[in-house]
Amino acid sequence: MHTRTALAGLAGLALIPSAALAAKPVKPKPTGGALSLTISGTPITVPHAVTISGALTGVAPVAGVTVTLEQDDTRPYGDSYKPTGVKAVTTAAGAYTFTQHPAKNTQYRAVAKASPTVTSGPRLVNVRPFVGIKASTRTPRAGRTVRFSGLVKPARNGAKVLLQRRTATGRFATVKTGVLRASTTNSVYTIRVRVTRSGAYRVKLPGTTELVNGFSRTLSLRTR
Image (cartoon, rainbow, N blue to C red):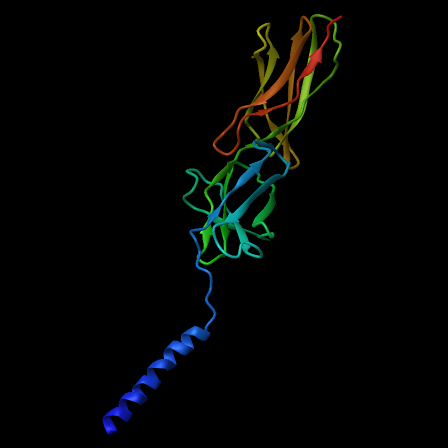
């Protein structure tokens, strides 16, 4: 009799943890998770902005998740990511967008505070310096000297710029070099060259590890 009563009591106790577990909400398990990362307008020219966007997939929910942006602007890229300080919240479709103004070549990645945390692959944004150009005249007399000048940003004081002329094959060949000098927060150049015939000219600033090649617009000169 006592044995039967004790067994009944143990059976009742055994039901308690099962009932408690059944009452707890069950969270959906992540299915891996993925972040895509797209970059628009690369390479960009200083000081233009770049749009960085993507989408969160493979977790539930995908909406309302905070995504942070990290950057690495020191080669070799990918060794020292740092927070940019900007955040975005995913839409109903898991999409997110950032706008950045990098001053030099920079690699980005996105990190979603999902469960677990999801990190995107890297995307590199190449940055071109701005190179301006103007000529003292667009219609010089044949054999006269024309002064080419312009503004370069960001500043590259002491760097060489190349004045180039379009050849018959459509390529550009360097006809003279100049040196950038300081002007407030930017750099400027002046190059004088004797123009003997009509042609198209541009100025090139060779790239570095921080910036890709910079090019001015092309100016057409017509001799008279």
